[in-house]
Image (cartoon, rainbow, N blue to C red; front, top):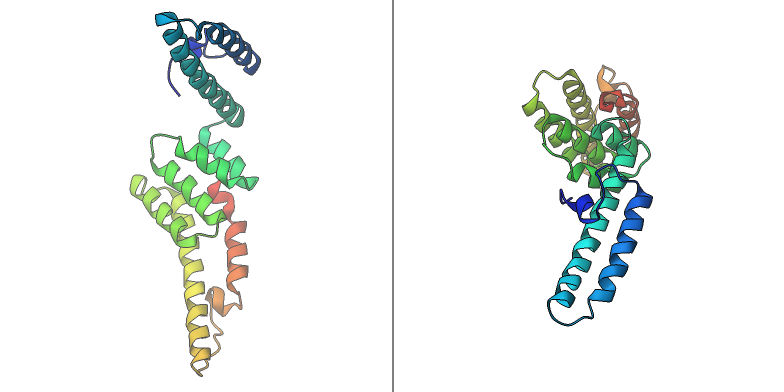
Length: 199
């Protein structure tokens, strides 16, 4: 958002939606009348119409963002949107967020995970760990994703062997596959451990 968007509309930074709409309507009416005048007055009015339209949209976006965030942090707002399965809105909010440190990559991992993009999710958690290598939340998440990937790899290998006419020996030991957990069950366990995504 342009820093001066509220000022262009003649408002302060804490203006309400109603104040923004009223200011825009008043200025729009003023400049629409002037833009048909000849010379510099008409040219200036046309430029101002464009400028106030951009400022109006920027202010609306800013107000929407403030409503989503509320009293919490940007990452809490993203977490809430992900929890409500509003992934496109969460992604849009995350894309606007700077700086892109560990928390940013961790939030991206969560969005990717909810989209079932497990490898991308794992890559983002690894990126988060480069910013904060001792973060327990990041480590726990990466460990869970690695276990999940291992289970998927084991199942894929068994399916390939079965198609080729081989049968893999039945495991009785530990691990997710050894406990008779399919990929779906393993992912449910991982989802159950989603507390590591709480901000």
